[in-house]
Image (spheres, one colour):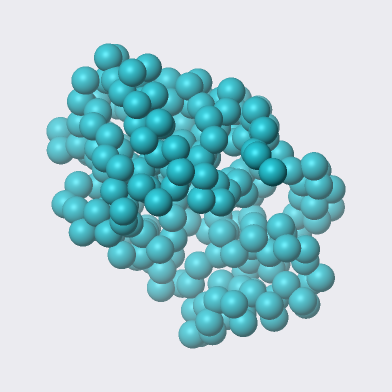
Length: 240
């Protein structure tokens, strides 16, 4: 059945799954899961233990997983995080779908999970196919404005070639945003993760697998949401 979604908004069950009364339970689950990860538990088994203990749904477990990390990973991410202004002369490499879909979700009223590392993560998924939605161009425009305001003139976007419509998204960015962002270049490659991890420029992503292996990184999605998207739906699972 074709995907006919026009927005990157909330799941119909999110209002109930992430109600205020459930936040303390989810925060406890994040703390416990991170504790297990810090002690060498495999992610699937650790998440099952915590998810079963707190009777979490599949979507709640996804939120807990995306919010958690080991103490070792958290320490490394804090050490390699840089302010966006420090990349104004060297430039940035961007995990394209990761950043774009997060901002689309924020604009559409989708839930954003604030993890232990301070990253804002959506609960959306492209499932192998990216579909342009009504928030796509506004999101790209916000991203471009934010980079410009911080003096970043070189931005290398990386999109996943195996994801359908990556070529169309590249053309859209080049046509609609490119003229106002001359320092942007869009790359459609088979393995963006490898390019981001092995490159020398700071990385823009909230992907945990990349953050734990890349060099410097900038927490751009959270900056954009905090400064440019008032009223975004944020669920902070860091606890105290």
